[in-house]
Length: 356
Image (cartoon, rainbow, N blue to C red):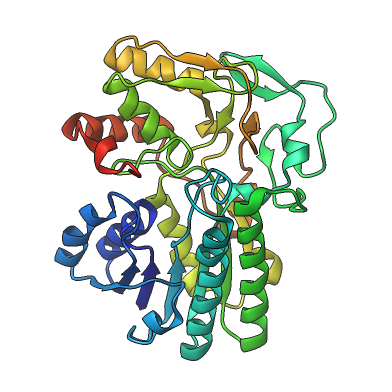
């Protein structure tokens, strides 16, 4: 199968490329604009694997004209920060151009070539008010839904399911992904090519470009090891907020199943893909792990929350298990060890992948 991965030199795109190449039976092509600090570090390795790389930007339709025809597109190109467009580092227009206009260009590419399309979406498509106001309690250094409390439809102790609302507000970032999902499904139905939407939990692993808004596990471990300042922000200022954790390579078995079953029902095409509750960890628990691994390092507190922060975000991927027989394979502790090993071998990684 001929596969095109957009954003191939980013952390997720490059991880998928390595794993897909190792699995054989695929010819990979990649597209990247290399604007993400650190992405250049993946170029030579991917080329050595026989992957043909194109320097281009999905926001520019003309950049796609030189790409070869493929059987499938995996869209991993996006600005992945929930603060994008409001943090002063990117404009709202840039965010929309990256995450929505770029998706439209890729859908037109799939329409032209009759290629399948997989959109790597996000947990941040889910409506913020119900999540921000979720009744929580502290258990073993981490928030969890308060026992005996009434939870919104689509949220349970197992996490946020696909049945939970995607109505605004979801952040500008989340809105671009919700709109991209809808357009992708409409394009697929109208022009008869297969489309899958994989809403991913927090991605993590070695070589991730650690930033607090885009790669919290890698950022925290690298910062702790380097004895850089760390801070618990928001809620009680004690680091009890929780996220799940997923290694990108664990997506590949699911992708193979989706490639092979293009005629599945519509309600199987949008799924959560995450490490779930077994992978969930608070910043305080992550700090304790780092303290044991590297020695203690103090963390400052700032109780005032940032825009769009939520206390507990764990995706329920039960539907993926039921409909696709998919489950994550890499335990969270293995992911943390992998990141730590990379951090120890690359002590200046945060500088290499810093935005400025």
